[in-house]
Amino acid sequence: MEHIRYSVAACQTDLPNPVERREMRRNTERMLSMIDSAVAGAAPFLPVRLVVFPEFAHAAPVFPTVKELLDKLAVQIPNEHTEALEMKAREHQIYIQSGTMLERDERFPGVVFNTTCLVGPQGVLYKYRKVNTWIPYEVHASPHDLEGYDEPMFPVADTEIGRIGCAVCYDWLFPEAIRQLAAGGAEVLVRVSAYMDPWGATRPMDWWTVVNRCRAIENTAYVVAANQGASLKHYPPYSWPGGSMVVDFDGRVLAEASPGPGERIVVAPVDISALRHERAARRGHHMLAHLRTEAYPVYRQHAYPPRLETEEPAASHSYERNNLLIDEAKRRL
Image 1 (cartoon, rainbow, N blue to C red):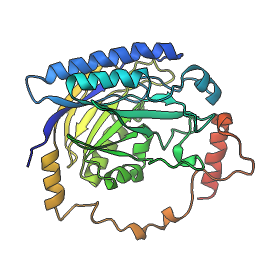
Image 2 (image 1 turned 120 degrees about the vertical axis):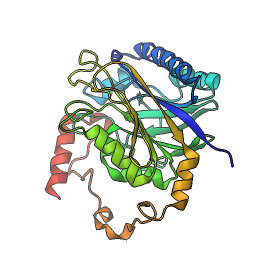
Image 3 (image 1 turned 45 degrees about the horizontal axis):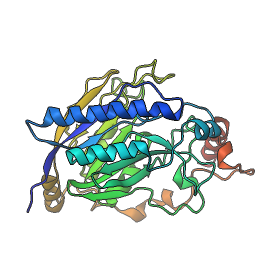
Image 4 (image 1 turned 135 degrees about the vertical axis):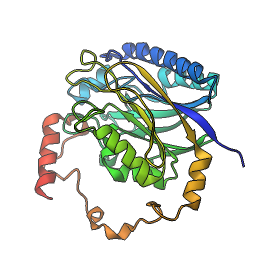
């Protein structure tokens, strides 16, 4: 049996935030250069086959309304950025988890998604649209909330370097989201994130490290987590602590960037063959096999978003509306 072992690279960025579509090219060009650096740096050792970028690396939801995001930043996928990544993936024979970009889709008029793509030499393998938006601030849509949405919300790609699944930032605060990726067969769990201070990669809270390690343990999977490393001047009103890391299937941190803003490339080994052996041989601490699904009645009823008396079109979603939904959901707890 072929032994599947390679390096992964988590590339955290520190780029100015685009405020119009044409400025996205600058960010994508820098990401292409970082891919070259990651591949060249690892070439004398265990070659890099998977490169991961953080949330908002291509573009962030910097405008407070959906209309402004649609007018100024949202793009369809595939686009010039995914095509550039595909060419780079083909050049190096690697897989690239893109940073997120704001996506528009003609099938869902008036809606913006926060989307990342897994791109390989053969093109876009999946699109992942953030399911758990960071409310109340984020006004783009969750596919979960759209009537008639019929695409997989947690896709997993079966590739020559293993089965890869991705979720974005706040998704990782919901164990159910990452468990669904594992249930879909994911062996490498990719975190594309813009996790800010004070909850980031530093004490006393350090949610970033705690969550990354816990999700690896409870799903017996590798975690490759790229966090935004932007300085405050690039992505106000928050500072972004970086700390990108790779965690093995027992929760060991294999490599991590020192906390603080700035570009970093973190490289660590991933051994898919060892993971598959462990999943097959292990009896204890096999939480995927031990899961008593019927024991949790909390999932039998709808929780969020609650139904408001007056529903509004997606394009009118706002910070204020998100707060109304949160208050109503809390009232029903």
